[in-house]
View (tube, protein in one colour):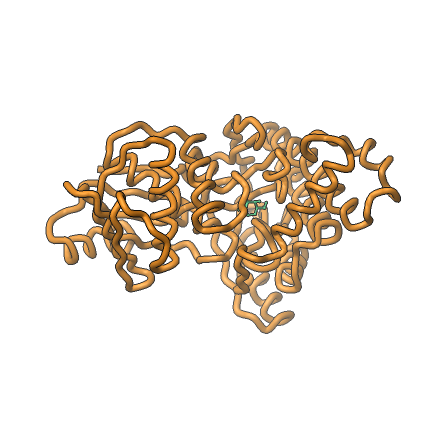
Length: 379
Ligand code: GLA
């Protein structure tokens, strides 16, 4: 049964009567521009056709009461007394309510059912999808307009300060503002963005390694600190402001690890802008080449790959229809993506899956994905 039907049916059973609205909030893959967002740099993510769905109805009081089908769990809270504690998924809803009310948005209660087909912790931004689903629910229930930048920033604030994960702004921005059929070139300093069409005759395939790693307490914060140290040493506000030639002059004077982290970020920003140009020209081959270069840099300089991601990317590279492949998201585990020529795509998934199983003994999954719209509400 499709998710839309599932949340409607479950709503009718649990809350009696029909939901007033349906919300869809997608996951994302990042085509290129990894670990650049918190360096004020550029990213090029696209929303995918896997999403979180919410069926909801407004309430007259200040209670938010939600049933999460994927966890078989229900949670409720009062908007006037937001306190931490409760199932982990409900903390995202509460955190968003907190960030919105801190920013002065009027909130009203609602009841709803949530379900999704986004694997959790796989690097496809299930957290941002849940945050933007919550923001959309509050904006719809209280009737104020949707502002992409504001909602993304408040979702990020909820994740940073309520949930306690130091993510950048990429995931919330793409989820809040994606356009179907397009990736988003986002300047993470100004939050200005343009929609860039996917090149013709190729598809994006998500390759899930079946391995998972949480972001909290991970090496993510360490990478951020190393990037900040590099920017301080170079005397720039953020690594976005450093040029490669300038960084090269620092080789030998900067801590060797910090130098390599900075080299990744500076190179990745340039690659991301080139990738957007290649897409505008419809040059899938060049986009694939840049994705491969991004991967090598993430693996060797930024050191955020891992054995499972390495195996998956190498298996994808071996296929003749593969234009490019790389890890996507924070790294270490989770998903890779491949850009594949449509004409040779048949058999790609089964061949890559076989190769990966043989090399790792792990059970992978693959989804051919299309670029979807951002968080949306339906009546
Ligand atoms: C996670 C974070 C993003 C971004 C990526 C790495 O997905 O949530 O903000 O930093 O890692 O590019």
